[in-house]
Amino acid sequence: MDTGVGAAALEDARFDARQGPRHKDLADDIGGPAELAEWERIDQLLAAAPKGTVYAPDAGGFVRAAFAAEAAAAAAREAELCEAARVAARADELQALRELGTLERTEPRTGDEAARDELTR
Image 1 (cartoon, rainbow, N blue to C red):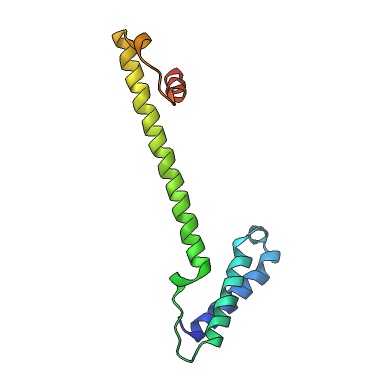
Image 2: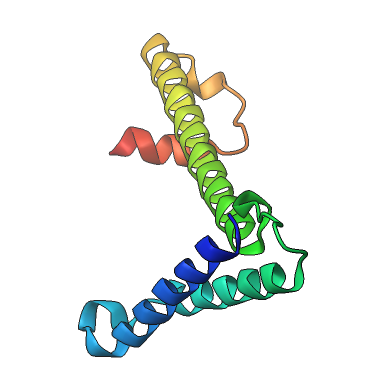
């Protein structure tokens, strides 16, 4: 993006910031002030740069932070899914051992409490 595009985006962000207090659904938006601050930073960078400099949004702090937050949330969801699958597999294994009558001779494993909770549901 060049200076013109950055300036237009900054004006849009300023307009949105002014609208926040007037609209109930925007009043609690914490992203608005952060977005405005980031556009102001980008505008300052472009103003200080030589004429014709282009800014790459994916190199910006706000975008990097958003990508990092999305990646962390995705990793947390993936970890939860993996843990749920592990618990379900162990619950199935314990159920099969119980049906075979060998559950009493089975050594407990770390995390079996969650599998037992799964079986009692």
